[in-house]
Each structure stands twice: as C-alpha cells, then as structure tokens.
Image (cartoon, one colour):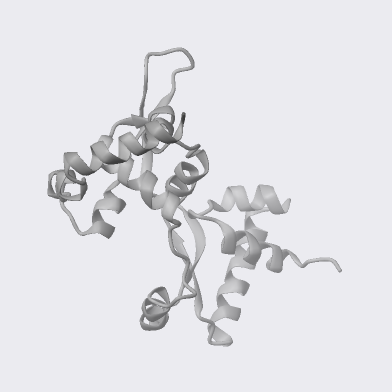
Length: 188
C-alpha cells in the first residue's frame, strides 16, 4: 500500500511536537511549496467536513494538528481518568530531586537516588517539566538540570520558594539513625 501525500502530511503533523514550517514539509514530502499549500487546504477541509476532533492550525511559522477546542471538556475529563498517562514513581522521585536541588547533574541525581536516573530525566525533559540549564566546567562538561515554567504551572506555584519545606518530609534523626544502623548491620 502506498500512502498518499495528504496522508503522509497528516501523519507528520500528528506526531510533531511543534509547528512544522511549510518549507520543511515540502522538503520531507519532496514536493513544491505550492503543492504543500494545496495539501494543507485539502487536509483542513477534510477535518472540518468529517467533524473531526482534530484541527489544523498555522502557528509559530508552521503547521500542526491540535485537538479541536470543542473537545476540551472531554480531554479534561480524560486526563483525570485511570487510562491517562501518569508520571512513574521513579520520574516523580527525579522531579523532586531536581526541584529541590537544582541546578543538579545526572550524576548527582543518580547519587542521591542510588540508581540510574537517565531514563526518568529524558522523560521529564520530553514532558517539558525539566530542562538543561547549564554545563559544568568539569571533564565532559556535564549538563545540569532545573525545573521549567511548565513545572511551576502544573504544581501551582509562582516561584520555587513556594515549594513545601523538605524538612516536613524527612523522618526525625532518631529514625534515620536506626535505619542507618540497620543497613550497617545487614552488610556484615
């Protein structure tokens, strides 16, 4: 089966995370800019005619498929459902480490958690909750990470000073001491 150019265009615009400029679409589809314009018009017309839950929009110098504004209520309800994707416990741990320790490198995150955290950091970057903020002046110039404005928006804070004090979540020193003693004795 050979995919039509319009179907290929639709697939590209469906998977992109940011608007794609018409010139890039023309290059990828190996057609002229005029042909891309015609394909975009056809795609938009098709989405409207079939009452699709998707909408083609020009934004930030490119094109992208978005959910239809009338579907917002359903999308909001779905986002609360059990089927909606949740952040894994490991990613939540990494997000907490970054939020409280930023700027922090992957090696520092790994050391704090005691396990490799690269996958969780990549997931959080992809979700836009953390971002590389700088590079350390050390061999390999490791990246350091911090939270983003999207993180603060999702958590409902205006600045990082509004995060709850970490001390509220740390057990008393006698409990920590007992745990450390248990771990020291189990290693013998």
